Picture 1 (tube, one colour):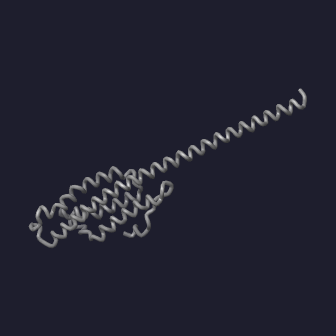
Picture 2: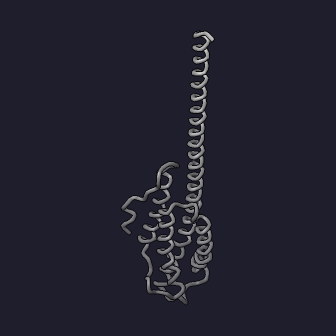
Picture 3: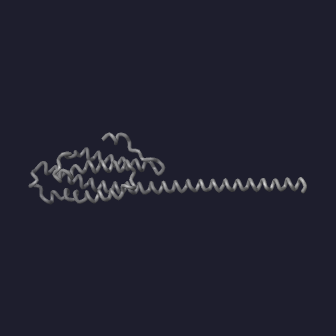
Length: 183
C-alpha cells in the first residue's frame, strides 16, 4: 500500500469519525432541546391550569362575597331590631349565604390541589374571616362579628394572591407582597 493510499484511508477514517462525533453531538443537543421544550410546555400547561383554578376560585369568592354582604346586612338589621321583627323575606339573604357556604367550601376543596400555597392560604384566611358570621348564626359569639373592613381586607388579600399567580407567569414563582401578610 502506498503512502497516498494510507493517507487517503486515514483522512476518510478521520472524517468519518468526526462525522460520527458531530452526529452524536447533534443527537444529544436535539434531545436536550426537546427535553427543554417539553418541560416548558408542561410548565405552561400547569400555569394555565393554575390560572383557570384561580379564575374559578375568584368566581366562587365573588358569588360568596355577594351572599356574604347580604347576610351581613341582615345581621345589621337583627342588631338594630329584635330578631322576632325580621321577616323571612328580610332573612332570605342570610339563608342563601348559609346554603351557598357549603357549596363554596366544596368548590375550594376541589380546586385546592391546583392552587399555589399563597392562594390556598388566602382562601383559608378568607374562609376563617367569613366563618365568624356563620358562627354568630350558630350561637357562637366568642370570635365576634367581623367588620366590613375586615371582610373586604380578606377579599382583597385573596384577589392579590390570585394576581400574584398571574403576574409570576408560567416560569416564575408566585409571591404575595409583604403588605398582605400584615393582617
